[in-house]
Image 1 (cartoon, rainbow, N blue to C red):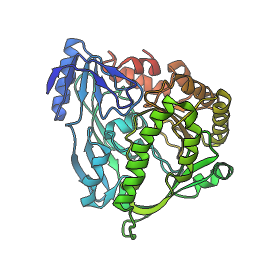
Image 2: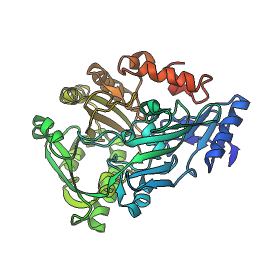
Image 3: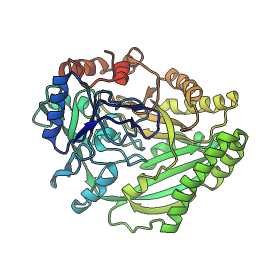
Image 4: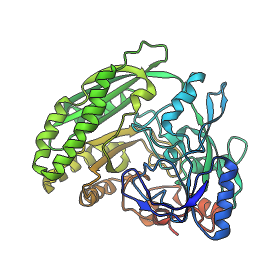
Length: 437
């Protein structure tokens, strides 16, 4: 489907564009035709998933390819536990597709609204020192290159390109399908509780390394942290899910409705933020339950926000966090959104924020109606000074000159981009900034 461009906005309302054309291909051949047609007219092309990136990575001034209809399961390799998915498939749709085969994704982030191609292309990750980001689960992929042809990357063809294509930033072509290495379905035992922040920080290394999945949220202006510890159990383990009422109270009433009201009040009367955060830190998320993995990993995010996240060498998480706390106190800001800290294993993907090093992630947020610039810029100075790498889908100011030294395979990736897309069919302002022209 093709129609004149309307205005496109991302979820966080940090980016918008009025494309010349919006197309909604339903087949791989339709994607190929769109790319060939755009090339003939001298237009650039960008594929868009759910719009959950806060950066301009998917902004499409020329032809916007909305991949929503390019969705579903293409095939299953039962013996090896692998599934082939069309690129527009949303993460929250995947568990239902995998259920008949007794499979699950190895790890997930805490939001499942993204498309699988968007999630892997921007480096989306969950938490767990023994688990990589979502792109590390990719074992094969197919993309449409700038000439409209298909490039297959798997165990038989172009195998050496997988570490680039699995996390390709949308710069190498349009992903049309990906093959994911799954694991047998499993459940998670979740323990969520407020704790003293000092206790969490003083034992951070062992807290992160001990359980399968650990993360914590810190409410600024308080001395409390909300910790989340998830333990993997066999699919046959007894389940004790949250009651529908309890889940609604925690996730919808408190997590969304009350939080929305708090953010609006904090914006109008900043002095209310510290005492409100103090209450939230004592009562939010004190629960224990066991359920299917995807129901534990993901939570509903109804309050719109903007986010910046940096990946740090794991040993730098504590000094970066301490510097962040001191910064907020020194500047006198009133920050209503919690700071999130997660972890991931090292991997070998060329443009992964965890490339070559065990990593910890610190994410800062601001309510979408608040200007995040001053807060984010100051936090960014801390993170870059401690060898931080910015999440590709979250707000940051770094450019190619600054990023090159942070990625050992940066020049290799750019050279591959130059080979596959010499005319920059898939480039936009963001990619030009972070990869160079």
